[in-house]
Length: 493
Image 1 (tube, rainbow, N blue to C red):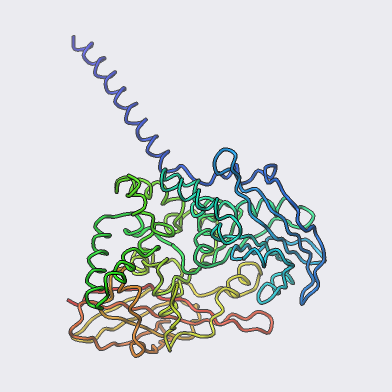
Image 2: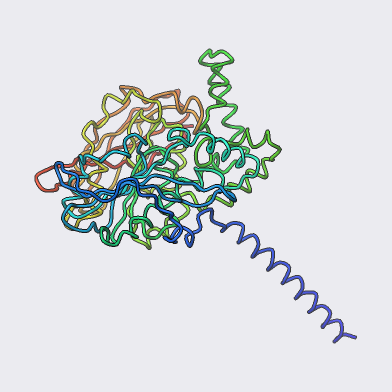
């Protein structure tokens, strides 16, 4: 009887193991189902190229050969393809090795031969190509009805394939790479750097995670990390709602203006405009939203892919802004991902046109970033420093330390008391004061920048960060670049 009981129990345990293993595989599969299918992205046979203007020479400051066409990105749903325009630009006298890929173009501009300016001239002279496509809302380039239908289907189903944000835009960048590399008489494989702001920072971030052909990104005012608001954490959203109500009352806002804050299109959005309220109105639950964000997070946030990206030697640089409604979670990022390189432009963000009077006016981060990425012998930009602080009485001492040999040339700090929580009306609307900044003192022996700040005795907490310059030389041109210390928030009570 004991032996039989043992056999039965073993069968039961085996069944339980198989069941639990199956659940684990299913859960893992759900987490890892990517909206971007790289086998599909790499298939040049499905590009369905329509050439509008074949290869031809374009004169200018640097002579180029250019081609303009449209390509098929893929099928949104049966019978409905998603197509985008693409322009190729290579040196006039040789193949391009790698290229700078951008999507921040308008249809009227991309249809015309491009006159190359700025750092693009240096890239082409050095043998690096340029590839342009369009990462814009479909209604801005003759696809309005399709855009409406896509968003309708997405809200109803929460399937990422139906939205340009989680499929159309990043997939367009992947397919532009495939199209370029299919032009073997004009491109040879090399590094691929992407840059842009807002949707043209978010889309390259997502494409970079999936497409190992891509090697660098410089993105501004776009999502970087998986903060609680983005992940539909109900407590974080409740904190946000309470803060907004208090802010509206404090500012004396009428109901219409108060609702404008709480219904802001990007307030607390996952990877673009917030869709929570629309999804809830369609019958989805908070649990559904949380399930969606957790399934997608690995596929959209740089912060969740750092180990893999560093193994691939990918170069990263971000300009999130200090008051931006798309990258609204800088304090959380500073605390949890202090090693991701960021430059914080004080008082700037979407819709903000009042830069701080002490803001650096000469920064050339993007140009220097691209030159360093593509060309040997160009000095690297500064890496993220470490921040230390201490409080004695009413004095806050802040020390920012760089690794030996980093060659930082300046240090300047900004601070704000009792700033509103991330994403709130107060966080977005209240700027760093004109008089709450100082230049820091440098200690060459320790390679540190330090400052003492006399604290406001009435404040409950303080936010601060510092910016630091390094000049990059390329040819006869000097490029001032800046990096920020991790954004830091500390309690004073």
